[in-house]
Amino acid sequence: MKKHVVLYKKLSPALMARLQEQCEVTLIESLDADGLMQLRDALPRAHGLLGASLKLDAALLDLAPQLQAIASVSVGVDNYDIDYLTRRKVVLTNTPDVLTETTADTGFALILAAARRVVELANMVRNGQWNRNIGPAHFGTDVHGKTLGIIGMGRIGEALAQRGHFGFGMPVLYHSQSRKPAVEERFDAQYRSLEDLLKQADFICLTLPLTAQTEGLIGAEQFALMRPETIFINISRGKVIDEAALIDALRNKQIRAAGLDVFEREPLDQASPLLQLDNVVATPHMGSATHETREAMARCAVENLMAALKGEKPANLVNPSVWRS
Ligand code: DGY
Image 1 (tube, helix red, strand yellow):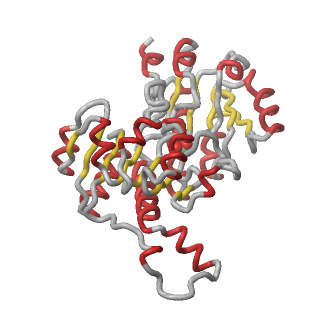
Image 2 (cartoon, helix red, strand yellow):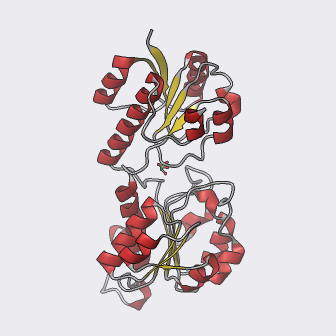
């Protein structure tokens, strides 16, 4: 008998066909109130789940007693209670690697946009306010040659370091849980304590996952260590920072600007003070959002799920102890 998979993210026709060869599939088209009701109705029969951008907590997953595997179409796994899944012996997989370069591109787009005031000045042109050659009031700041500080030297951090070092001649500083000798050698990167990095880097980029340890890592105390020239970039998760403290730091010119792809609450509220500030570039959690990369992530998730449901070890296992036990 075919295993039953509940999809809460639409797949391309090719991937849908592939999944349907092996599984019976229920598609939840959208995660609005109706969709969530449909999801709850489908969970009791589900052996597998595939999707993204939904907090799957114990209250919801208790409705799925037959559940064997969840394939997240994301690298971040902060929407899942890993301990709970492991206790229940439910396999969790994610989609690392395939989104690394695209997400680093987004990080660099934010660096350039924030430093060169791209969005603000493009809007000035669009709004018919470009009346004469721009002067110092509209100048940005250089990116090339400035110091790039990366917090969280995983795959995406490394891809940012590569862009900064080889593309823009930037000295690279980094802070992470452990030293990375290969990264230090390849990009001439230097390890710093968090405090030193915050004091020394011109661009501070967060690329680390949201965990109990990283939640609220950057707050008022940390923003106070930065310099008025600092440009702050977040492509990790909104909850790694204290957003109110960031707003204060921007308003008080404690830092120069911010490029933000992630927020404490998403979608970002239109009334957020961040949107009142000219020195903020805000994007809609689009780190991996290109046609090619989103298709590659979906393919990776389908492969992970099909393997897990066949009893084969998936390539991207988040909770390997489930497999061994
Ligand atoms: C990821 O893959 O974790 C991206 O941030 C999208 O959620």
